[in-house]
Length: 216
Image (cartoon, rainbow, N blue to C red; front, top):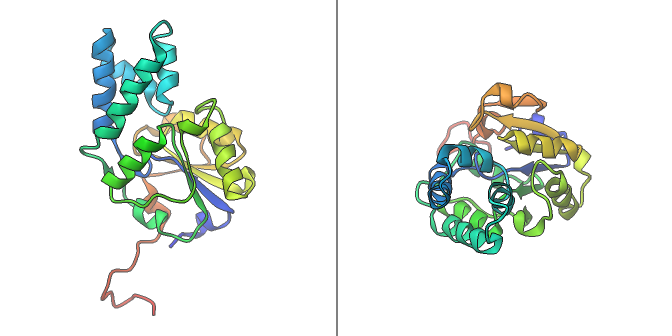
């Protein structure tokens, strides 16, 4: 059940990694392998890649590399490595609510669906991934496209994001933004309209079978 903080808007536009799922372990492994192949600092690469489509990260870090081959290698690794991916608190309740919703992610559709499956989460009818975009976050294209596919105005949406790039993209699209403290400190999330620990802070838990307070 969605609390009033989200009910005032026409739809929810929600990020995937660090928002709905914890995919930190496989993401680190994928980019650490990339960094090792190219003699780069793994921690710096991981930080730089967060919230960006992989093809943009590769183009910015290795402009002279074979972009197609590098992107294909990252894509393959992201799809097959889902070990350690888990749902974050509140994610299942949000995705199973009746609120119009779209997932807006910087990874590919294949990687997104693999991570959702690994976390035991449903795939909503609208999922905007890097496959559909010319420009990734912090560009607002992804959020504008998600709102369009839902048939709503982005200015009547609330975005749930965990990264500065995602927050900037959502704000540029005109959406209200609630940031989650799942991957970044508050001082990095200052552009959001509100900051909460995770999605469980803005959804009501589903009643358990046999709960004496469960409504008929």
